[in-house]
Image 1 (cartoon, helix red, strand yellow):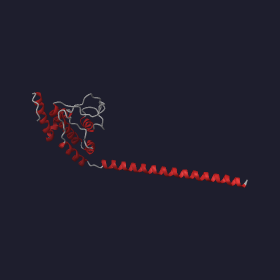
Image 2 (tube, helix red, strand yellow):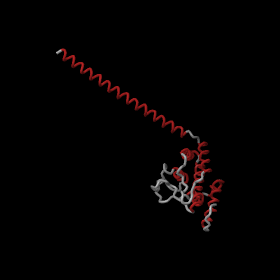
Image 3 (cartoon, helix red, strand yellow):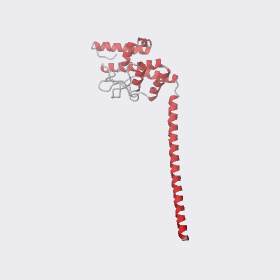
Image 4 (cartoon, one colour):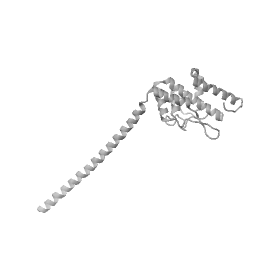
Length: 208
């Protein structure tokens, strides 16, 4: 009887040890997951903080440099110039200017779209769809600069479904807001657009 009691107590003791062991493994695993999650969150927060740390002045420099040097690359039968490869820091800079400097935000977006339209006319004598997203709306992820232009000019709603959104939207906006012609960069592109459209109207198809 004594031997049976000892065996029973030993069995209970071993079960207790096994339960403690399993609990320790679970606690350690949970701690590792919490640590990894915390590190991931900290990394994401640091990335967000770094992005948001760009000053309005720096954002203006980024946007100005991009818009004034922007050159779409269209060529007949080989490809139509687009806004597909706009750098992430430029997109972020436009978003910052939307809050900090609405005039520059609108000015440089207009300049970009004017250049895109000029490129399309020089290449193929017509405008083209400016969106990459085919859903009919303006997707802020797929078409960030089109989205920014829509917010800046209020020419059309971002959720409004449109069958076609022409690359000529910048030109249309300038015609309706002649004060933009006071900016030399915009005036220069608009003058070039007039030369090209006049040539197209006269069936004189050469690059200007």
